[in-house]
Image 1 (cartoon, rainbow over the protein chains, first blue to last red):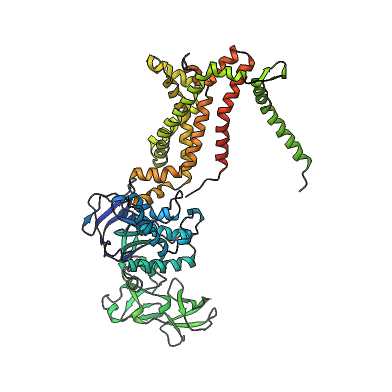
Image 2: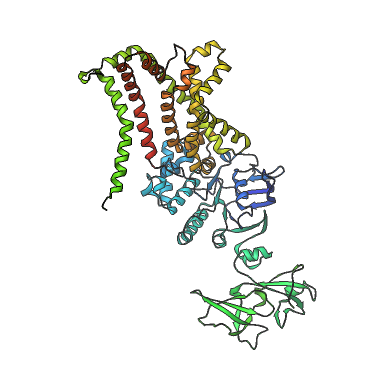
Length: 364
Length: 262
């Protein structure tokens, strides 16, 4: 199987989708996916990720004015059967009237390929996906993981220009999910196929994608590598959707963010862009906060409760002036009890700052 | 578990009901094969009456088979695409069509026949031909075919199956014949059996629509009851049962088989 040669880049220009009932499912979208790249569309349900995938697939057509290109080929008004895509559906969409081999061979059958070629390629696929013992089994005799592999084999046998995966792992249990996503990722990379992968699971997104596009209410909130979206979220939505975030609302006071008696020192790169006294929101990840002695700290609180998670302990600290409990991940084997007075240290480089708090109340 | 008196009472009642229904059929079969029904079986068994029926009424039997087969064929060609359209489309028009299709089940056959005669009865060529009965049978049986296929379509996720086939390059017709039709097989086969059975046994409508030259088996049966000796009409019933029973048994057997889902 050599897909790298057939793969193409995908370009979306001002692609918008309005449903027949007038709902705007997707705001005008510009997106470029490189040849051989895996792009993950991530977001909560109803954010437009599946609509985007269906537009790329040709299962939906975009509003007037939008354009979808596969390489140089304009496929905007081309139906799915002529787009040369491979698609893996959430429910797999395997044909119950055909056995495993027939399902895998279907794409070649409708193209009128010779019997020899079909048999050769189906055999290749069966070997690639460890499905040889199940070749003549009915679909209803397969486990979830096996069905998933049949669906993937069926989608790539025709060497499509792009591969589209619509939440392909969501019907599987957590353990199988983890194993399969590693397998799929390795396979897609080996084939060098351009792939668009839809999921609502952020861990899956980070494991799968070269880049992640996070969608919110019909538009891309942020697009970038896993590191970029995790470490430098551009909006509150992205920050909260990927991983856990602690929020500190306060006023810029000199070189620090202050609220009540607490303050967090800020690095120059952050505070220099804001005016003295400006309301700002500062965020940080639980694993970036360190617990220290109460006396020396500029940020002080009391332990509310702690949860042992095996590789770490999640400590929830109540800090004066902070609305929500501050989540802290401790990696050393230390016990914290309710009421323990602790200090919190946040390395300045681990801070993310978002302005425009608007009219939200700031406790200062 | 020890079976109580209640169980045996139930069993006795069920057997009694079965006997109530089956005994007349059995008697009729016996009548059709007995030399003289009033003397009883001791008068001797014979196939004379069956042969006589065949000589007198074989044309009605052939016509019944012909109409039943053509009705089924028309139902297949119209009913399956119709069910597919209704399952796919959710519009006011499809809801209206659905209602229209169900209507012939509720309207008495006589009324449908009367409607057909008053509208098309003037076209004498059509009125005299067996096609006139065919139209009536299609109107009466089409809802059964459509509903049967529709039920299967609604139980499988056929849209996704179709999208899956389309993503692999299948055209509309390839999708329809490779994916939709095979996965509706149980619905189609049960629709076929129902159509054959209903068409072969249809009397009300056919009685109104027939001409002396386009008589079907049930109409001929009514004639023979009215004008022939009991043994002949019983032999006629026997032939009818021979035609219809295998279909009914096949339909029952099919319904027992678990349906495969997507």
